[in-house]
Figure (cartoon, one colour):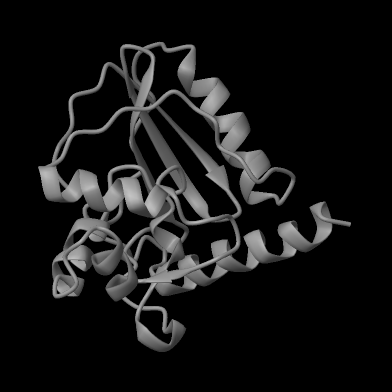
Length: 173
């Protein structure tokens, strides 16, 4: 994940472990799911809170509601920057419905580049906004969980998928 410019951040504990949300000009620009044991790429760090932003308390509340299964939506004001290919992939990932999954190959086909499954995987892995751009919903062929780096990795990916599926069942009753 590339370094981003931000003017405020907020770290908080959740059922997924520590999460840090970064904002710039009242837009969420990055989310890091650090996890509990810090096995992920963020290493052994919880970033101290810095700056003020009205967007951060709202993001915290909505993320906690989402991962507790009480909401299917994370309607937050956000922004991101990537290459043209990354942004095309992220826009497609954003379209994956709550509680469903899609393979790297399916995404490659949807963006008109059927041979680009590995490149899609690289773009998904550089997603600056996990949860908002639901990269946890992207799986390998045969619905195999692989390549998820946020939090505790695949354990966190499975946890989020399980939360969504249980929430979808509970909220549809």
